Length: 121
Image (cartoon, rainbow, N blue to C red):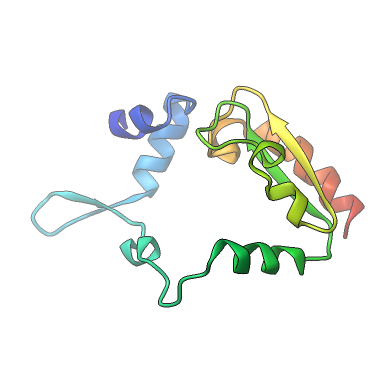
């Protein structure tokens, strides 16, 4: 739990406990390992250039919601240029949230996502 909270100080003790309990497996030797798949961190077999990625984004025509935590290490879609590549996108910034907005401020996250989904379903 301490490691989880050191990586994301926005997590409450209850959230860190939940994510830790449900995010690890106990190994045969008594040690613990994270459940995530290390292969998702591997590079894709085909590298996309920035131009190819933005071309793919430009093909997305459905309503798109880009959510950003105000305290995220990543810049906002408006500032990093990502917003300009989507044909029909809007943004929302959640205050007092880092990169994992849905963990950091679930109630506020859902208050933005649910109306967006209702409007665009």
